[in-house]
Image 1 (cartoon, rainbow, N blue to C red):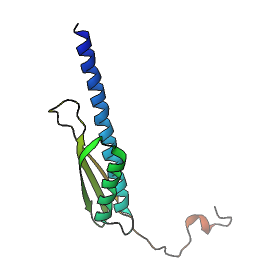
Image 2 (tube, helix red, strand yellow):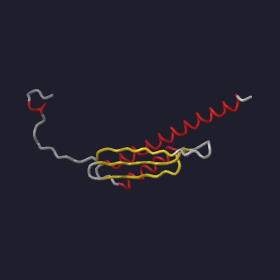
Image 3 (cartoon, helix red, strand yellow):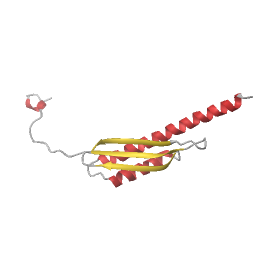
Image 4 (cartoon, helix red, strand yellow):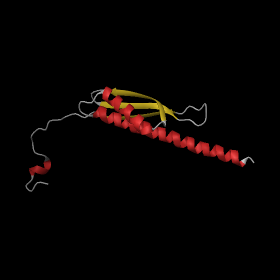
Length: 125
């Protein structure tokens, strides 16, 4: 008689774990897309934030709620943090999710006009 409730509880725990993992995946993907926008030449915090929000909304289909995006952009690096809450099957459990993506900001570098090492020798590469 006690087997059925235990099996149902285990099933709920497995489903809850999946929902949490899915919310983390959504938050990570949204952070990466936002950071990619911020890192581009001419990228901005506003565009990165908008991209992360839109991507989280599109990808989550309700698995990540209360989404908040924070963008930290300076001349050398861009960092986007996406926080939210995973859907909970069990009331009272805090399932907050935070994922961050950081990378260097792209810069245009002019060439010196000199030959590369492989072009110095006859025969090229």
